[in-house]
Image (cartoon, rainbow, N blue to C red; front, top):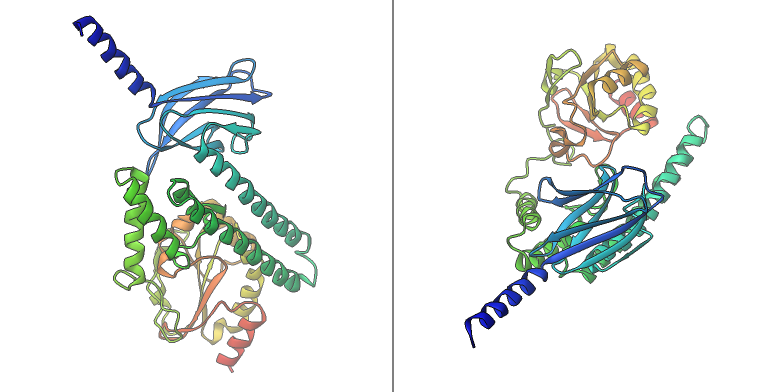
Amino acid sequence: MNKKLFLYLFIVLVSAGCKSNIVKISGTIVNPVIGEYIYLDELKSNELKPIDSVKVSSDGTFNFRREVKQPSFYLLKSNDNNFLTMLVKPGEKIRLKAHSDSLNYPISLEGSTGTESMAEYNKTLQMTIKKLTGLNTIYTQNVDKPELPKVIESLDSLAQIYLGEINTYTKKYIDDNLTSLVSLVALYQQVAPSVYVMNPTKDMKYFLKVDSSMFSLYPDYEPVISLHEQVKELAAKMKGETNKGLASVSGTEAPEITLPDPEGDTIKLSSTRGTVVLLDFWASWCAPCRKENPNLLNVYNIYHKKGFQIYQVSLDKTKEAWEKGIQDDHLEKWIHVSDIQYWNSIVVPLYKIESIPCNYLLDKEGRIIASNLRGEQLQIKLAELFK
């Protein structure tokens, strides 16, 4: 073989090898916005890394070309609220068609089995979200009616059914896709902010299952490494190695809370010792919490002079919303604290808070007497304590 022929074959082989890693993403936007851009971001373990952007043509078409060496997650988006999560594999030619305001629900999608699978899952998830949103509408319609307590009980029951259905569906989805990275994404789906379909405590078996499969297949991929570390930490907590959370047994001393009030002064939960205390977790954005506040105001007015105090911890997103909630509901009389960290608040893991409203009634030594007493139940318990 002469040198020229050998060099030619070498170039052809190298070029062919490179092309096998090239991913092509092409799409059509229905009724495109003139001058709109489509962005491609790579999903890392803790960040989105901007990769490329293209202006959508007048006929709605766009194209991306990217070298991908292993299956990886990407976001195709027009903005932070309108995106399609894609699992991209080397050599794929992805084609999609979508409306400009709903990339996450494409009209058609082909060329990527992982992305197609996630889009199909997303349809079922969206159906659940619509059902839950419908329950919130019913609650709003009945908020001022006398039968509201019965309505809430019925709505809570339906919500649990819907959440159970999507949880079961997600488990089957994971079992059916255990060798694909889509199973990792399924672990973190939400029906509302910080309301996850899969619970790491209750569904630990599936976190372990996905971690075992993904770490054996993609041990160097950042999101897989992140999951592996999280699962190790969760497993350690469940074994009691690092669990510093609240024990659920009555008589347990409530963990200390040290947070600032609206004026910025730090107030410890332990500073209330010597009084019977309702430790209440709430937020101005929480409708059931706001509905319960008039009852708290009522029992406070009755029992405060007898040695009753309320220590209310907010999971609000902003100080402005927190202070407005206090003012609008006339709650200025008792203690308010917050770190304004929403569901990232330090009290969430400390007290294992999964939903609000949530409360604990504490005796004069700071020990738990009862939990989640609301309405008439709280009134009865306080009447018993302050005979």
